[in-house]
Amino acid sequence: MSPGTIILLLIAFFVIFIVAKGVRIVQQSEAMIIERFGRYRETLTAGFNIIIPVFDKPREIIFRYSRELPDGNKYVQFVKKERLDLRETVYDFPKQNVITKDNVMTEINALLYFQIMDPVKAVYEIENLPMAIEKLTQTTLRNVIGELDLDECLTSRDTINAKLRAILDEASHKWGVKVNRVELQDINPPRDIREAMEKQMRAERDKRAQIIDAEGSKRAVILSAEAVQQKQINEAEGQKQAQVLQAEGDAQARIRRAQGEAEAIRLVTEAIKGAQADPASYLIAMRYLETLQEMTSGQDNKVVYIPYEATGVLSSLGGIKDMLDMGKKMG
Image 1 (tube, rainbow, N blue to C red):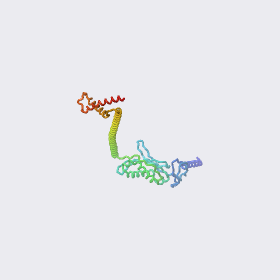
Image 2 (cartoon, one colour; image 1 turned 180 degrees about the vertical axis):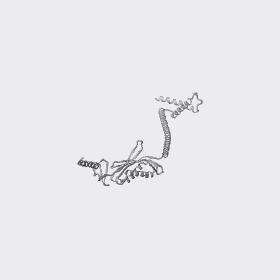
Image 3 (cartoon, one colour; image 1 turned 120 degrees about the vertical axis):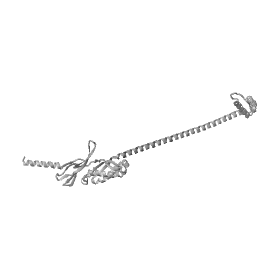
Image 4 (cartoon, rainbow, N blue to C red; image 1 turned 180 degrees about the horizontal axis):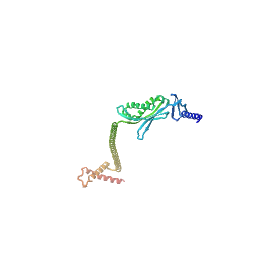
């Protein structure tokens, strides 16, 4: 091989090396930190970029990956990369033991959603960003849970999440990181505590059931008493109305009878007008005759005795006959 050919091959190899090391294509939502002789030079964004090999070199950053094994267990792997992922990242932290305010050891695991907003700060302000975020989350979680009782931890997840997010976001701001959400996945108290809580919940449910049953029975008794009372009131009102109507009917009947008797007296008086007879005697005689009929209307139809005054009635019958005869003559 001639020296010229060797030189051409060296030049071609050098060009290929320059192109391979000098051309950097950065994908969307990624960034690359470039240093020149160990000093920060620029941040490469998405698209086609050119650097000078040997002089410029990408700065590596550590990323955290959580892998799940076939048996269901998870392990964490830290990998160095030249490109920073600017998308929102999720860290699933393993369970850790936390002591509550009432001295109960509880297992808690959390999810952290964060995003790198400033690649330069994420590289130069902290040595190992994933490890720093993980340790910061664990210590903050211990501090927040340590201020709450177990019951508050179980019923105030939203409050705990908001408080954790605010603290972590403020602490990680200098690292160029924005913490978007923090979610508590599981809160597992010890087994004996869970059993005690279940017994307490069952007792509370039984208590509420008894209270509801007692309130229902009480309400039923009240409604039954009100129904009986209303029934008695309605019956009394009905009896009162019936008595009023009966009294009004009796009064109307008496009025009608009195009016009929008055009309009869008027007609009798007009009939015997001009006759030499006394209408009062006529009426008295008629009453005596009615009374005599009632006295003789018994089962045996026998008259045991006739009052002395009845002879006056018999004597008045002749007067009645004279009145009727006189009326015929006048007619």
